[in-house]
Length: 597
Image (cartoon, rainbow, N blue to C red; front, side, top):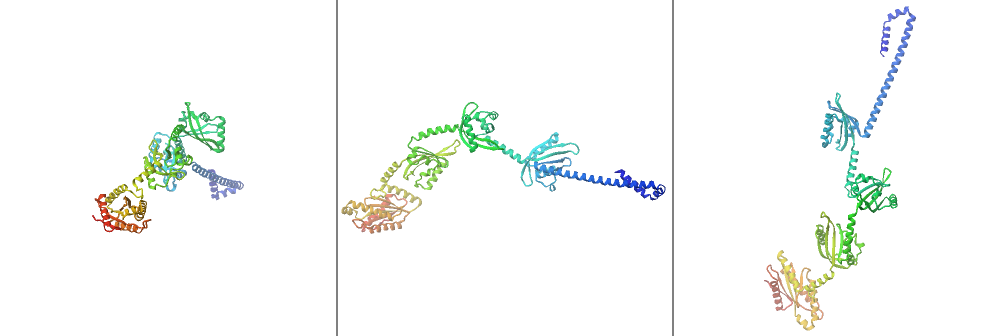
């Protein structure tokens, strides 16, 4: 290149010295002409060579620039695919150079973010910041590699996990070169796998995974511990060495069933290291992973269950021998067991009862408040006792002395209930009849004197407590002795019965009506004052006087009324009503007599 410029300069000089050339040319015309031609050729060739060289250089440079761009693009693409970016930190100048992928990982825009060490730390999760600084300082102080996994917070608030590595270049200027990789998905998958492994190890059942040749590929902790092996020992074994119930023929049949159906359930015995048999219930399923077939088994130790079943069988046999009904439910009230006596007394079979609810016996004789109170007591953990009316399958009602006892586990939590019931229909009906006889007048069916006095005590106490009025009517049939003497006692009894019906139609349900003796009756009227008791008495007098009585046509009644005072005894209240009755009789009968205290 230098030669070319010198030649050009020389040529120029020659042309510039026109006079000199012309002088020489005149003496050496042929020689000079050849020289000029040679120079012109040289200039043309040199210029062409220079132009070709310049063109070739530019093409090489352009190709290299294109290669560099391609390499840069491919590098960025590779970093994006691998989530791996690189960075350079000029420690003295405190400047950071980040590749595009680093910006993507941090969720930043290069034009809007100035990368410095402090700015980087701002994006590190606060809980990890101190650990990151300590790792950088340690690497710089001890001339070691920098490597750490930490969290960062992107600008949108999301958290990512990254793995950073780096090394320090101590030549001036001192720099740290490194990489950062987004490992969030991998980290979360590893965390999930670790969590799954911990969950499987926490499961009380054994989890076994093995191929169709019986070789184990996974065991949870319970699987090898409960059988007395180490993990390594059992992983080196075959399922056929553990499952002692299955001969090769039976095992092949099971494998074929698994391939066809996909799952199966079986009870087998597993052989422990110490030679003991462990009864288990297996639920196995055919699974496919990476086009390979495996068997996933969930295996439960049922040794305690078998013992419990034997005890339950003993209990069931004993319970079936007694005459009382026994019924068991879970916590929600679903029947899980009934004894034979229950079936005999109610008419329901075991198949009809188990899985049903005790409401199948509901008679409709008890309101919703009764059952609310029942559930409140037993859910509190207390025993509930009551005599109630239940209904058999055929619709017959029966009385039952029922006891409901909550069943509790070792923590005191209710797991179910035991119902024991004794059919007391005969006893209850007999007692009811005896009570009826003891409290009801046999001829008329209304309360007798004894029951009236009992009810009066309750009503008078209520009247005192709530300051409510209470009034009494004493009724006597006029000339009733003449009825008996003239028509006989049978007609007299019919008169009494009809009179009772008339009175009952004209008084309220809360009024207490009783036969006091012979032809005398009492009406105790709660919440009735002096004025209203007179109105009621007059109403009764007219109803009786207007009624048609068989054989005797008509009768009349005389009445005495009185109103309860706070300090009254029954004797005092009755005496005032009796004085009123006496007054009515003395003044012509068929009227209401009143005595004021």
